[in-house]
Image (cartoon, rainbow, N blue to C red; front, side, top):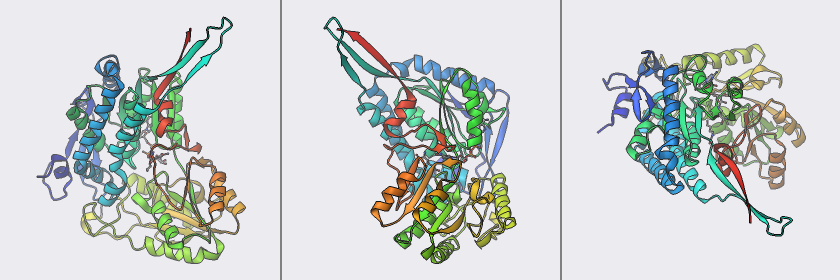
Length: 502
Ligand SMILES: NC(=O)c1ccc[n+]([C@@H]2O[C@H](COP(=O)([O-])OP(=O)(O)OC[C@H]3O[C@@H](n4cnc5c(N)ncnc54)[C@H](O)[C@@H]3O)[C@@H](O)[C@H]2O)c1
Ligand SMILES: N/C(=C/C=C/C=O)C(=O)O
């Protein structure tokens, strides 16, 4: 039988729109103010959920519940006991995999294959990998000589940072939220999560999982709402929050950093990008076309690690543009659950307006529109969705808006280059530094170029291939800090050195 979640999002169902409440101290609670906001389906514009908008009272209660859990049962658990609970969370996410897929498809409108192959499996993985890391990573110790000859022993212990504020974006909601909550809880912290107003569902569903598994109440809390003058700002300004981890736009990061400076709270930021794809003439051509297609158009281009600037070595430029055009024009728009469809809408009409404004700007700046540039003709029942065409431009200078600004849609600009030094200069000419994808069969060149592109993550003959033990984060205006593997421990714990005179 369909679960309540998937029934709620089955377009044919008569189920009333879902009521989504805040999750505080293990209970689903509305806002005391009675304030609520609506979530519309990106696919057809239907109202599919009514969400409680947390005010100061709810944020205060959530931070208080997190503190109480730290000082209570959760804070007293051994590492092994915590690890067992987190593996239990991962197993319950896996057991309810279809519910998480249904919830995220409803929120984002993205096709089932994007959920089942790219995003939802990472939910369980993000808990498992950090549960195992915290259990197996040693800390340091030093023996030191002392004048009296008896020496001293120094050793480090890791202690949780405390209550962590987790502020999340809408593009891969469950993946990105659990990418923070997993290590935070593994390290013994408690969390208050503020999901994006566009994608509240999977964060609420994880609350059900926490209760089912028996994670102590108050360890995991969720407050819904917006940014400025709403739950996001109330959370980051709350001095009961010991550190803030944020994923979102660079300018939002700047606002949160200002809030974090009150009380000198640490921040971990994963921000915007304007990532370059570098395609050399000696690449595996078909693999490069597939790789750049995925990196430019997966999730309707709403991936921070995605490629919006493509540089192709001149000898293969024309045939590469043609091959990418062919793939972009072969997508089939439709509902997430429609097996004949493989392409979804943008997250909202507001975001579509932003993307279409860049489509218009590109033409004003003289771009050649190789394909796309507008809105696809959709059947009547989907006409109210936030659909846009995958778009490819050529012919613009590097100073053009669409070559410089993060658009966060299914679009990219392609230009030719003539040598390695030129393309590295082109790739680095941006204030961002998140990721790059390099396509070449020349091994020496692959290593040489990857080391010179100023980003946090460089993929060679691949894209979005993720080993969760590796350092993840952006350079320049794409982020502050690194998470992933042991690097997450540096943010989610404080290292305390103990020096013992022998
Ligand atoms: N570097 C990465 O790993 C990564 C991953 C995914 C997305 N992103 C970036 O996220 C952006 C898209 O996501 P988005 O549109 O949700 O970003 P956004 O910055 O608009 O919002 C992100 C979150 O911050 C909240 N928020 C907004 N203003 C706030 C404020 N003043 N105080 C506290 N919270 C506030 C929002 O409600 C939302 O929950 C893109 O720029 C993308 O590059 C980066
Ligand atoms: N932090 C990560 C980013 C994913 C971005 C997807 O849009 C990850 O893969 O861990």
